[in-house]
Amino acid sequence: MVTSKPINYIVPMVAFAAALLLLSRFLEFPAISSPIPTGISLSSSSSSLSSSIDSSLSLVLGSRPTEAFTELRAAFWRWDAEVGCQRFRERLKGWKVNASAMQDSRSRMDCGKLGPAHVTVLVMEWTWIPDNMENLYYCNCGLSCLWTKSPVLADKPDAVLFENAMPPVRRRKGDPLRVYMDLEASRKRSGFEDIFIGYHAKDDLQSTYAGSLFHKSRNYHISSYKLNDTLIYWSSSRCLSQRNQLASNFLSLVPHHSFGKCLNNVGGLDKALSFYPECNLHNSQPHWWDHLHCAMSHYKFVLAIENTAKESYVTEKLYYALDAGAVPIYFGAPNVWDFVPPNSIIDGSKFISIEELASYVKAVANDPVAYAEFHAWRRCGVLGNYGRTRAASLDTVPCRLCELVSRKGGREGRNL
Image 1: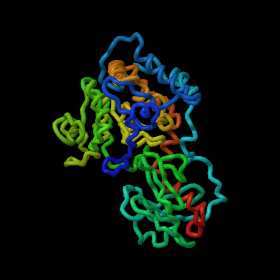
Image 2 (image 1 turned 180 degrees about the horizontal axis):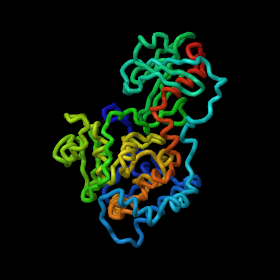
Image 3 (image 1 turned 135 degrees about the vertical axis):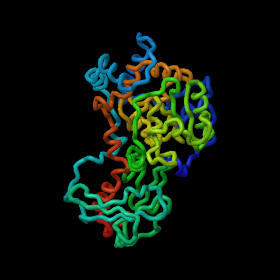
Image 4 (image 1 turned 180 degrees about the vertical axis):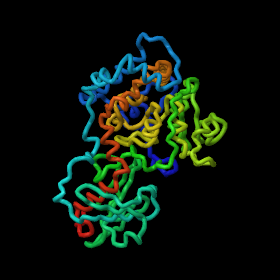
């Protein structure tokens, strides 16, 4: 999740036993010569994913000679000439996603089932919800939604939202509905909420990390030039031992830049601007997150390792890389393909060993056609479940929550 936010990371001690690791849904952090279990058994619904991975492997392991490249657009043009969108779509036309992993936030509402035509949500206590979400929204069925942290503007709210504080234990009729949000890996209900917001489709309201409100003010300059001698960007300042072990084992095999506190190899913290001065949006000393996407965009790959591997827990680590025009090398949610475009990431769990993964990454880095294949989804409009993932992000929570509060009757709604 957002780097500075405290994260609940609990790994049962028994998971360290090798026999249980093979069955565990948590990440396995292998030694440099040990295999990487997938953590996923391919079912019939994901067999098309396997063929998609096989097709990208064949592009790399084909007969083309090694060819170093730095210009991304030139790689795209080569891919257009040798593959093209028609063949790409044909190859992926049988690619299926697990629709149940995502709530369909775009489904047509029954406007007749709405209650109050105007809903006010008061965001309570200290929270990581960004201030730039504060707004008056115009939603489906003519519903208006005031989302604010001001108890003055929302003196009689229909719902109160808590994230880092517990809602009231009791609610009487006429009091605002209690909303509790937990987007951390633990995803624990408070037990006192009327509406729970989490990252899973089973929650009352699902919120993914694929939106943009957390980073609206950042420098979105995307470099068309990709480094050829330094392949991978990694930045982490929460140095969890198991994540560090995996990163260290992998990064020791590939040329990389590691920013942040963990495994830093660039001469100090937050050195990105000395490497890429064009990323300074404010012409002053910015925070590291101001230039995150711009810095990432200079690299062919971004290493993205979740704090823990939970079903459907796919955080901004992956989406930042996609937004920056890099290819994520991902370790995390076993059902990650339910949340990303087809053939858009390198799923580290699909490789038998760290060495095999490193060899594959190096092969892709020296093959412009194979590398461009990872960007074809956005150029050809092949999104899979990604459109629904974006539509259910934090960006759309205000209207979706207000619609749910209205359907429940607002302040006059019954306790759940």
